[in-house]
Length: 640
Image 1 (cartoon, rainbow, N blue to C red):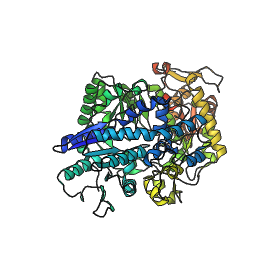
Image 2: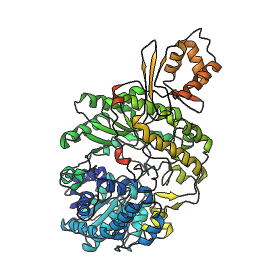
Image 3: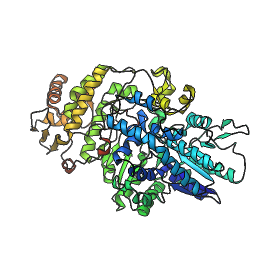
Image 4: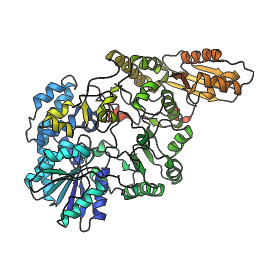
């Protein structure tokens, strides 16, 4: 049995597909008599389109990620899905006028007109390989491209079995895809490395597929039937390492090699241990299975080392939704001692200790995403984030001190928030300009499938409809669009536009002035020297030598309330005569000087220790600072 796994646009071009890498190994190792090959159609597209238009790596990134919440990438390939180069062009233009810049609108419509030719070419390449089964993965803005290719393959070679899977096919989404697109023979919902080999084995043996968990199939009459989803997620021991054979060779032969530095994608865990206890209200990640499970430290370490050795690539993207804290004392120390100068990106919790962040930095985690979405405790409580505003600011400070580049997003639009939650933060943003700013301006939250806001209307969102872009992309009734959609429209909640404008103006200034801003401290024992260069503050150097001030500053390494600070300072400096009134005056003066951040009755100092990392400020997120908007799928981009 020959299995061809296809990675259509708009899959990222700097990363091999983890899903298809795992499925390739699953087929090769678990299906007797079967072999799998991966077709990197996303890279083929870059070569094809650059021969026809002035298309760049920034353009590809826009359609792959930045425009996700506007659906531009999916609409581009809807013309191929419906075999009509003018498919709903008027609807798209009417809806997106004012949201897209003229140049972006022109390019999007031109791509929409020409991509049917690409789908025809890639479908003929697929058929020429004479596969028995073709599997398409679909994540983010890959859906219409995958569906369009599946449709044309089925027309050219009706005997070829077509299968779809991936994040866009989880749960009800996968059932809706299968119901509405008859050219897709099967849809695998959930974790594919278990179900896909089981499906292939059944096809090979001409056996029934009724018991393949989550599989969508058709009965003798052609009616779509969805098998029950698996009741338990795969155990970590069953999650195979990916096989990336062919990706790096194909990238080297593509024009895309001039646009990106390739990275390896590695996976240590699935699910979210925080989400198991407190599912963040806006988060739709993890789909059907929130349960956290992780590979053994030995297994994960060996996978990382083997991939680095095999592909001679040191940049790695760790896709885990949250770090397994065991890895801090198991995997990461071994990486530090390995002699490999790895450069890793991972998602962490914002309340990690500085010593833990130092371990991350020493292990090569130069870029972390700590899930910061606000600097106000009351709004964070509405999200059920489990951190305070001061803890998030402390993370930004300690990230700067340990040399970590911290990527984060500012979100708003939570039911129950008010301008009073944002005004104090806006007032203090000029003091924070030396710390990493958010990736983009503040974005109103999107309502995502699988999130508590989607599942529980009592939290504040009712009357949900699929986002507008689904309606001009697919030729489906509203109820079927509802089944396929991941992002939904809802009446705006939370703060009004006046507060949003004030917040975004402050964030824009932060981003603009960050490179030149500095605030550090150097603790000499008997004195602390602070050095500042921030546009909103006239002072440039300050020395703290009073014993009480020294004690208070050191205590504010961690967030403290006035009461706790008074109690601890009194014990550290006996006879100082400290009381809350005196300490409040000191804190107020430090607030005015931009030395501390205050939120919800807590204070924390914002001056990283003076270290060498402060002298070398590399922007690891420069590719998402482009004018076209935010790349994070939890942030809504501004007009592009």
